[in-house]
Length: 305
Image 1 (cartoon, rainbow, N blue to C red):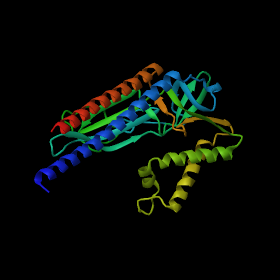
Image 2 (image 1 turned 120 degrees about the vertical axis):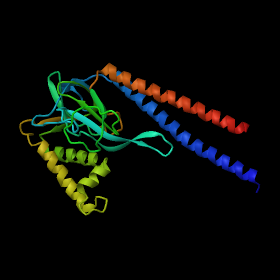
Image 3 (image 1 turned 60 degrees about the vertical axis):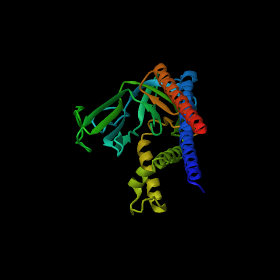
Image 4 (image 1 turned 90 degrees about the horizontal axis):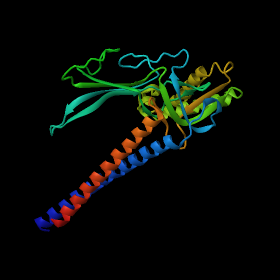
């Protein structure tokens, strides 16, 4: 086999590799465009319900948000009182090629329930698994990978670490689209089992946190005995949440839909949120066409070579 033949096959292999990578990127962009467009249409087309008359199933609700009674929720970086938070700490790093990128060192999001009130009714919103658009986002730089907390929002020029904290606050607007379910006090055992199963499912979606919390023998997984401990812990947490069921026999909750429908929380108005998703869809579509055009030009140049 001649050197030219080997070089040709190497070039062909490189082309196939690039095609595979670019094709995967195009599929991800197309999926992002479809999801964002679906979310925008969901907001625009779904009728808004009142809590007292909301039907069981997928609903859209708008109201004011508060922390549940006897709950104090504080954002982890600044210690600011809020109803929901999300944060991350990132470090600026330079690759061997000289490109600067951010590496996430620490992150987290609130799973505390949010109390939603509107038009004579109230319910709890379980934010686990939701696509959340916060009302406030703060970012600043500093010199510490693990700063003392609470910390002040004070930007340090040239700081290697980027701190980002997103929040929603009490009394603020809250838009919710998710699955509405009423846990009846008339059948507390069934309600307890259903809520415990939902909580366990939420824990399983974050395997790293599940292992950290319940892996007592250090083997890197949750075995049968440890899973039983997790089940007992879930039942105990749910029982604590429902201990007032004799006074309030029905507990209305909105959570992540089981059938894959969008689960959205937003501190912005309905119109603004739909505009955000449509803008996101447009960005995905534009990127799709630009990368697709680049791919076609690359193939055309290769074939002409």
